[in-house]
Length: 81
Image (cartoon, rainbow, N blue to C red; front, side, top):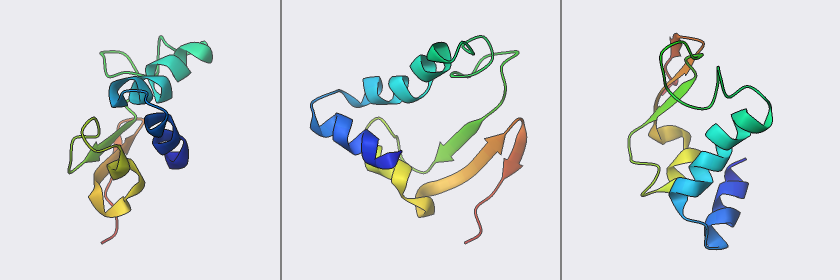
């Protein structure tokens, strides 16, 4: 959850590692690293596009107004603003 991102960052974990834990590492832990967790050919296209760099601003992940679009299995959904 977004609160966990903030807590991990507050504990001194660099933002790159926080995002990696939520994506690549989580997919690997579930045994799904071959199809989830990163952007690569042949993987499921689940992406959240933000207005700001999430590495520089982890708080952007918790702010719906900063979401440009969400892609779920290759289908794009735009937020209702």
